[in-house]
Image (cartoon, rainbow, N blue to C red; front, side, top):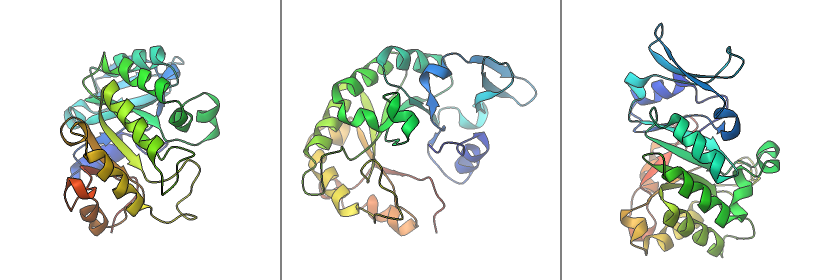
Length: 244
């Protein structure tokens, strides 16, 4: 999910190159619920149009994206999140809750990374969305106040999200605010975290564990998904940049 990038063109191109699932860019739930769903016979798309009747919040190609599109939402309360998930349920295979965005607009509205420190609220949002759509996934970062030697809060958050109904959790191996050019890959830390989660049957059979961040080559991806569950392997990798 990349803001101003994951448009229909990039998503369809990714599918044509072999992606299993594609994500929309983040849509703010309280704005998205105000859009109108329209069929576009000229393009053969489904368009979610803003109230001004001109700009489009989301355009979907049902023939190419059907069954493979997850719509990412930014939300801070369960009621609005549920309404937004229901609004797009017929066109998406699932919805993803953004809990990783550290941008100020997200934090001030209680969305994105602000939810990392509010596990009960985050779980209530997941639970509400799970009532109205086929699958709910969540994208998180390491929880603030954890560190590379103690990830207990992140473990507890993942447990709460899974119990609430998350079918997949994507772990972006950074703390909120960290930038790739200033912090190197935290892959060893991530594998330790995944290995701890894999000791619980729910994270082997009920909730997929995906990874994201600093995967730039095919070798990186193969490494992330190799070695077996108990060594901290991932079920899949999310990509937001080109790979070599």
